[in-house]
Length: 392
Image (cartoon, rainbow, N blue to C red; front, top):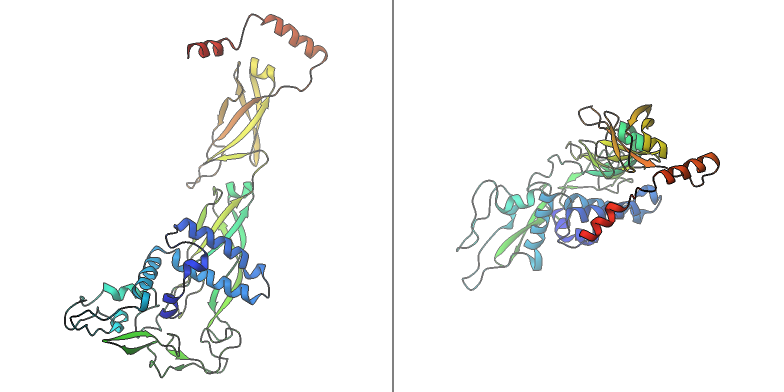
């Protein structure tokens, strides 16, 4: 993409977020739009495919703090026509080509000086325009790609290898990324002589901008590739096996280095970011590295105590001693029966007791309970409650 395109495109508008949107808001907007316009969900819809490319491009810039800062500053720099000549002092001669060159701008007649070497305004556009003037053939890192995967509760706790289908921009296979039809090669743009930039006079200064003939590539394609139409890039879909580590949680984001979009001109691939969703389990819950389970016990077990069996996730049941006089809601701990931690050890299983009340009592059980009620009639379990209410 040329520098002019970066400056003129409104990535905030593409994602539908305000200019002061947080990283989380940008991520949320991207994920929503990416799902709606994903090529897999809109097969044969070219408009949706182009929209998906724009959304991915906008996310690549705005989700990276440094690139977003460069983008915002570049748009502000060229807003309302870009740099304007000086005031009554006679103006100045300034070649904005230096923005893309190796040193900061030099002034004539005062104003807007700079220091030679690195840094300064030149670095502002380095990341945006894909390199400085004369370096259009430098390697370029591939874009980061985001994907999602849904795991079962057991897979999230134990870890799993799952297939993930991802769609990203890669070098067109038909033309090997040149943009030219098979059997032909691009030629050096005569307008910019391969630099990708041209200078034009405007008032008291010269403005360096991406070449309009080659769109900043430095090359012209006379016979474009029928697949990528001369861009050298094409949408690539592939399925890869990804190892999800044990102990991941809902909405956790995993980074897989070098598994994103392929780089350009020999550049490194981007990264793949996988957001994990976990299907709830009908019996077990999760609290950090610990698993949770609620176990019903009978009234005699809670009152008299005893030993109860407790299920574990993917393993044999464990026996736990229930103390006499156990109250409803008591939580006990079975050590080492929880989720796998990063160091390979396991958390605990937190067992919450729930006293089960039978919906209907008849026969000997009812008679026994009647006798129990008579034997404990003098005891008021709510006495402490009323006393505390009166003293409050």
